[in-house]
Length: 117
Image (cartoon, rainbow, N blue to C red; front, side):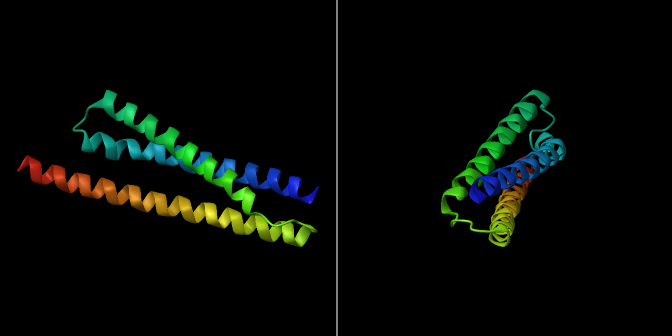
């Protein structure tokens, strides 16, 4: 019973965090993509939508898969510990993905600068 409650709390928390962060990336990242594509709005919007869908699929899928590694939860303290630990891992993965994406955008923008000259 405690595992079921923990799963529901964890998935709700993970879903809210993933959707909020994804929406922030979607809204603010459009400017970067638009700059890389020299103002091509249609292509920018298409790429941004694909990135958002991929982001949601990866993060919700990863969060769901992590549940299979959970130990049995006998009481409330263990439940809180597991939820906090797993949520921290999701946040860490979000941060790593964001840094990787920004690094890719940086290298693409550097390449575009060299191609223009």
